[in-house]
Length: 298
Image 1 (cartoon, rainbow, N blue to C red):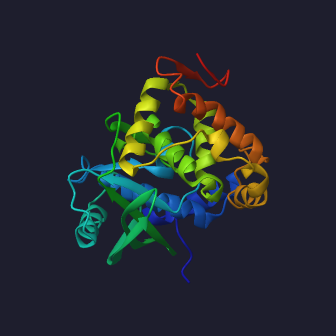
Image 2: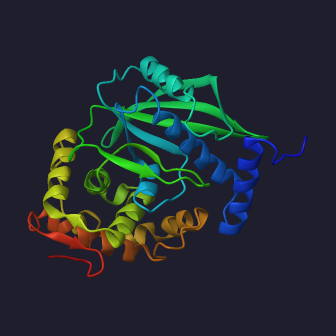
Image 3: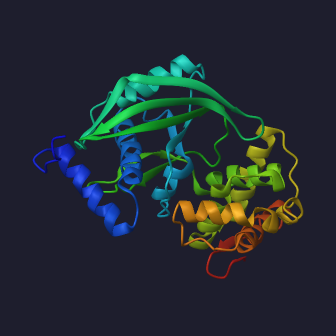
């Protein structure tokens, strides 16, 4: 195999990611996966679909300053047909768009294929898988597109920082209240049957790092719950016994993703989530603001 050289854009990107992985205690494959998702967003930002695909999910957290590992990019479609073949064509068109800044990524358009994914209480949409190469490395990227979900408040401009040097990637994204609302409703719906550790970790992280408007968060939760026809119970009641039940799997997930910034004890995570969420579900904070330092509404 020919050694990777810094003489090419793709070679420099690969070697820089390799060095960053060593410094950060991550794997090169993990960072290449994130870099490929970032590359898709860079192409989206200059494509004709920039106003029709709204960033959500794990990659959005980077725009909030709370990046975590993820293997897919989640997008909400606006004025898009949710037919799998149509979404496939949209993703292929975006991946074919030349980015404003060369990144060395090559998206294999012919490899792209779509499948419908369904989740009875949380998600339905289309997943497009596409192969990507960077120098000698190969990654399989996944783009999940949902259509018809409410977005409230309205989508906002977000700037996603790059793993390597370069200007932020500017796309439309979920407001933070809406990003939280989807995770909160899912947690309340699934109760102790949930295995979406990332949702609890994200709620805990965002609530520790950001102020939130109570009225906006309550309205966003109401929008999501109405769309899913969900009756929500307080998290404290919905998650009785969950801390003990899920501690082992939480610890395994946290260790696997090397998320040392999250509490080791799942009970501490749930306490943080309940502190934020239950006053909202009880309708007590519509005119209040969440203080992440004090861990309270005021």
